[in-house]
Structures are given as structure tokens and as C-alpha cells.
Length: 464
Image 1 (cartoon, rainbow, N blue to C red):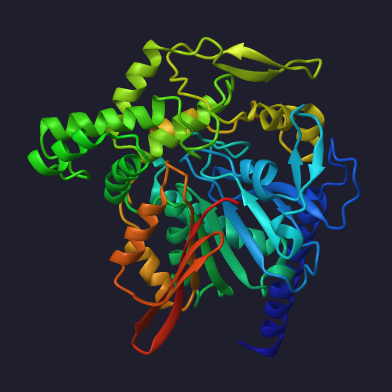
Image 2 (cartoon, one colour):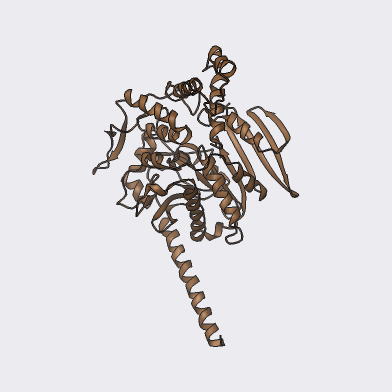
């Protein structure tokens, strides 16, 4: 190649990079939220909403809030809600976002406990089909744990192409519930891809994570017994006379009793998110979240039994919310074939807000998309779970010296703290510190492999 040819090649590559930079810079500007409906208070950070193309036909919706402190240097967190099939906007608008939705479903209030006080946070609606994420060639057969991990990884890379100034910040991947699958599988891909696409992966954080399917069954029964939901006579029959392996349901008696206990936990009027918290019996929209949780966290046979019974006793107020031409968000009857579940937490406020026309416009949502829902039943019903134990993924991430935190609320039944304790213990790491705190318990583990030390913390949290 002569000098002229080299110069032409240089100009071509330089021009290509300039065009890419201009493209992503334009995308960032177009995705900026200039006026968020319902937010009357002044904010001191930038926020954005748009789409990340993760395959030829799949587009994941994200909502990005910069840190209120020092966005140039503060860590950046990617957040995923679970299900599978539930929206990360639940985390943003109902949990730890900078603004929380009010009961009227039209206004927002500032959250003094927001995570973006000291970190930038990206909330991604995943997998495709959840919330405002969509496919141009819809196919439910390709939605599984592996595909979700690959598309989440592509979403992370696409994000940093649009916002390159954040790529050198410390990176944390976080989520809750079934994100106990999403987060480690994504982090493992980031670790494997460091040579090709280096990122400062610093930590992963999982709240009440679904880490192991067998342990989830076993510990749910033990949790129920320890909290007085299973009487002593039945417990002794199961453990002593019939020798039940709770996770395997080894005979008809054991299987039947395990199913009965799960049925009571999920249909007995209890709040699976918080045993001691009231269950709102008039919360029609939360049926979608409850269905998605059960579909993702319960064994198939147990879930089918619960579905059959819940349809027989269906809640006539089960409904979805729609947005009419006058921007009125109202209830409509849900499909009679749809399992309504037992609703506990009222998500109608977030659903109303996310379906307001002015909100959709502010968030850059395409006009052809349908209504937003807290969980997508089609995704939940058709999602293919292929990872039953996340130990190999967690060990790979720890082996890459990535700090790991598992934290569990001690009254959550959906993914209980005993699951977290047993999962952490069976990893085989040595406990180096065991603290009893005024709000719970913290256990620090050390992973030593080929002279590589990495920190792993399990924390059980008691609300005060």
C-alpha cells in the first residue's frame, strides 16, 4: 500500500468515526428529557429516555438519570427488575429513582433516598416485550435466559456508544428477584468480553435474588414453617414420617403438601413481598406482577395448580388500564383466560402515569406502540428458563475480582433470605467476618483462587 492509499484509508476511517460520533451525539440530544410531566420541583441532573437496538429487530427502552453529585466521576449502575417479564420502571418510579409517582398517577415527588444521589443509574426494560421495549419481528420463542443476557450485554455496549463519557466510570450491575438470573449472566458476559470491549466492571448487587431453583423451593417451605404458616404436626409428618426432600417432592404426599403450602403462601391473602405488610385486595393491576412472579419463581406444576384455582375464584375487579383519545386512563376488563392472581401492591399509579400521552411524548416512545404495563403476561408465559443455578456465573464474576453483594429483606417470601444464606454457603467460600447489626446481619466471605482475592458479601436486612 503506497502513501496515497494509506492517506485515503486514514481519511475514510476518520470520516467514519466522525459520522458515528455525530450519530450518537444526535441520539443523545434527541433522547434528553426536557420537561417531565408531573414533576413540579426543580432537579439538578440530566435525564434521558430512548432505545438501544440490541439485535436486528429488538429495541430495549431505557431511562437514564445522571448522578446528582458528580456524574463525570461517580459510578454508573444498570438496574433490572425481575419477573421475568416485569419493567424496571417499577424500580425507577416506585423504589429508588429520583422521583416517585404519586397515588393520582399524574404527578411525581422527589425521593430523598434516590440512588442517583451519588451514582448515575440506567433503568432498562428487559427482555424485549417488557414495558415499552419492542420487537419489529415479534417472536416469543427466542426469549430465554441466554438470549436475555446477550441482549442486555449489547444494550450496555450500545449505551456507552451513545454516552461515551461514562465508559470509564466504575460500573455496577444490579437488580432484584429474577434479576438474580439476569445480573450474574450479564456480568459473566462482560467479564468474558473484556479484551474486546473493556469496561470497569466493579461490582454486582442483587436484592432478594432468585439464585437457585431447588433452594428456592426448599427454603420457601422452611420459611413458612419458621413463621408459623405450617403447623408442627404437618412439619413432623413431612420431615420424620415421610422423609420429604422438600426441593424434590419425592412422593405423592410430599408433593401434595408442598403444593398446598405454596398455594397458601401465594393465595392465602398474604403479601409475598413482605409477610407483615397488608395485602391490598383491590389492586387490579398488580395481578400482572403477581402472575409474572409466580411464573418465574415457582415450579411449573405448583404454578399450574395455583392458576387453576385462582381462575375459579377470579377477582371480578381484575382490570387493565387503557388511555383513550381524551387522555383519560380508565379500567377495562381483562381477558377471561388470564390469571388475575392475588394482588397485593397497587401499581395502578405507575401504570396510569406511564400511559399518559404527554409522558409517552416526553420519553420518546413511538406512537405505534401499545399501552405500557407493569409486567407483560406474554413474556412471562413464554419465557424459557434455562439457568437453574447461578453458582457458576457468580464464581466466574468473583474470579474476575468483581465485588459482589447479595442483600435480602428478611420478611420477603418470594425470594427469601434463607435462599440467600444457603446459596452463599454452598459456594464454598470462607467466612472472614460475621456481623450482627441493628438492622440485620452481614456476612463477608473471601474467595481465594490462584492468588486472586475477591470480596463477597451477604446481607440480611430487617426493616426498622
